[in-house]
Image (cartoon, rainbow, N blue to C red):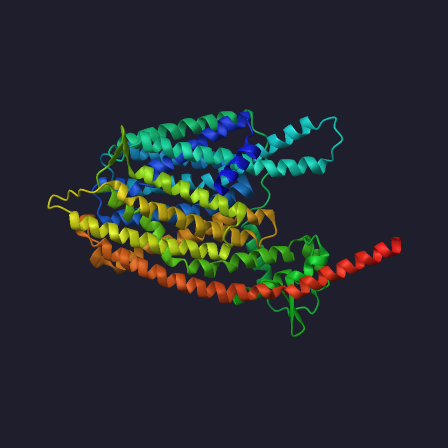
Length: 564
């Protein structure tokens, strides 16, 4: 019922038809097609090229990690220098060039060409979210505002009502069109792209990507003009750290008025963001402890404070709080070490498992590994949509639920690998259907939906500025992407179980160790979340809030009595 309600609400609020949709939606569709048909199952191509298991793991892990890191770089360049439109064209062109390179050299691909193509593809995937999504959202938001203005023309309605309605509908419209493109792209890839003909896959993907990129460029005559690039989200942390280091010798003030409260809208709520200890006023959050020195970035203790504020040498308390909250999530990501290993396994070991299994026929349709990735993406989308809209599980515990599903996913993979090795014949032919991997990918979708969605909601709820909120997802993906490089080192530790070919390896032992490690890290995370976060939530005691409410009620009653 919750799923149906969410879908109906999205359809009701999100159906916005515009000429810009035609030009942008095609590019979103091609990204979904290529991601599902090429990028996600790239390890299968490496297996077909007779690369050993080690190279397949290293190349695929490198592709995922590099894409996550480049995503932050693309955001910085687009927001601070060239704008989203030019960044999208550059990234899409790089994506197309990488696919063309693989298409031309597919039959005799050397390692240098492969690495160059991977860098181009990683840059292309980095430009999809949030750059392309933000551009799509901006265009639909402007369209909704225009529709509201035309509809309300001549009516007696306040501009605030128009703004409220447009703000409510624009994100729903983006989610609707974006989700539709992702689903259709995954279905097309499952039906028309085959892991047995990689040359054709690269050819189709490069043509589709190039054509939709050209269509996107043609749409420039219909797009609403973008605002000029102003400031990248990366600039704020740089300024905060720079100001904190410069003011490192300042002592903590005894009053909150000694901080730069320029961006604080509600002065009455400022007390909830400060904490006084031993006569010193600190900014919240106060943990982790290494971020305490960032408070000095907002201190105003000198006579030339106004000049420093004008030159942006003194940051606001809002900026400092946001940066401290970004630092807050780093220890959480460290506890997700095993989660990164499981997530990488889904794009490497699980894909190589599928390459040794027989396909499953549904009528004239052969179920391939691409269909399983489509199932995983659908499960992830449903979970994250429900969580972001209804908050069925609190963000901190949503991460724990995702880590629990990672344990179950490893156990399922362990059982499948044991069965696969048991049925292996001397000619390496294994009489097992690829559908036996469905539970693994189903659990993988639940794992990513709960864990990454929980991380995003946890950090978004603690941020104040909109520019930093838009940076949440790329920031999390960057941290997780860096962690995925660890899968290469982890495979080196258990080199005795990982041979040149998957049928000669003991991945069942690897998955069992990974399940045990995931269970241990789940315990570490629960301990950390319970004693480091929930205990700190009492920074604003319930008694204080209740006393404030009661005081406001008393004042209102006094005012009513006076008026009477």
